[in-house]
Length: 465
Image (cartoon, rainbow, N blue to C red):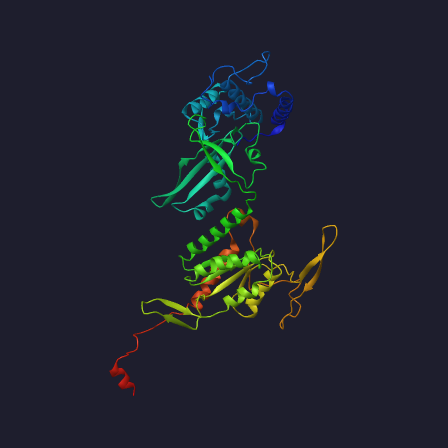
């Protein structure tokens, strides 16, 4: 990124803003998306065609001349701020869309040379975005990514949207990154071509949960394009949440060599009980669990979950064919830990607190919300509103009413710092894994030592007598 500063550079910025505002007033005299015109194979890109479809009295220039003018403006702004180090003397990385073919890339280089910029390297925009992410996380990316991972980079533009796939590979013990694919280009939504003057997301406005026809192609041209039908979601929160849970589950499995499992309980209502049943029972082959109750919205089903988790293995059933089951059936054979934070409350306070009271598991994280009193909301009013009142309070012999307005004090206090979260580090989850492994070492799963089966012969019966 150019480091433009100082009064001279500021004047360039002010001039650019004035020109942009003026161009909005006379759009037919404004050149837009000159860079995109460089990849338009249907026109002569050296011919004076811009502004496109402008009145006859407007002087026109070619796409390559317009691109060169943009670069010359940046060069002049840089030189004004760095008189002792002109831009022409620098090593320049110029970003281009991933959709640019060889001809468009050559034209970009030609435009840069016209602006006096020769020491030039072209860099695809999705790759540039990926490099920016690498710079933001530093060397931590080597812990975030592993050989075999593929990262999808989405470059949402005004005219087209590009997708690049970056693969992580192992080169003699060193991680390296390689772009392995560029995805299809989205050219139209419901047969309406995308416009550089209209944000891509605007084409999907009001179309959530309805079938939408996308025109796509492996090149930015309409010839040979095909159509696909998709149903856009109206809210990406659920998708992001499911992905977050998946990444946490995979992180726990990676750190513990697949021995430990992970369950997140988002609330203590229907959604939370479904999440618990969905992910608890399939992981009963694990040797321990991280029960994540952070951001738990509360509810009323903590009793059901506690009753399931407080079961301990008493014995085993073994079938003639060799199958082995715990008794009671479907019981976690191993320790678990509970994560909580300041955004967990109500029944989300009670659950980790009961785990402490019953000495079922240690609680890790930060002190929970402390909003335990439940409300009754069954009084409708004529204007469509509703009246609620505090109704259900928690009391126990140890703290009395003390859980309200105080929350659960974790056994192990651990905060997630903003700088760690920005780098993809979940310190609370990592601490939970650490404590779980310690408990697993101190309290390993019960292992049946069946030994040989009893003899059932007549001789054995006589011997017993």
